[in-house]
Length: 246
Image (cartoon, rainbow, N blue to C red; front, side):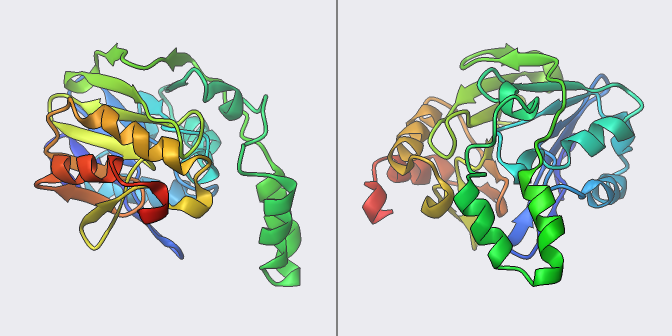
């Protein structure tokens, strides 16, 4: 979905809802934020094509955090590109993307539960997918507060809680926050990340206070898409809510 000239979401319909990687571009750069679950290269390519962008021409891929629904198709996207795209992550995300560390949510218990929940004939493929680690070289690491010079400027904001390495990105030209999973939207309303899949909900909500200093007109949530309007007041209220009352 095109948000503004040079900014769009590549919406992918999954069983659990709509996943929204973000595409940002100008005359110099084409940047993809997150890549979706494994096997989603065809959907990403088709969605980019509807707005006239060739996905194999992406110059940079920025990852918000280590979860499989954000990095699962990263190896396929990198291989498909003719541009040798620069892969950018927070310094804490790098070892997960490069396969040095097991993804924090891929515990043996969670893997076993996920396998048990699918039909027996699907279990070998599900096991292989969940136990695999992406092994993509990270070209550039970033840290909190860093400003990237692309597409009008991108500010790096560390927002741990959903995962220890979670990072959001503020697009200064557009006054748009690429929130990753720091926020989600349901029926046009912003919420914090879902507690069952958030490592530290208290920290995740406290991290939302990092957005208070920003002039935000719209938020892109990976789960649920775009919310515009009076978003700052809603974010401030979420940051002040105890996790048990969220």
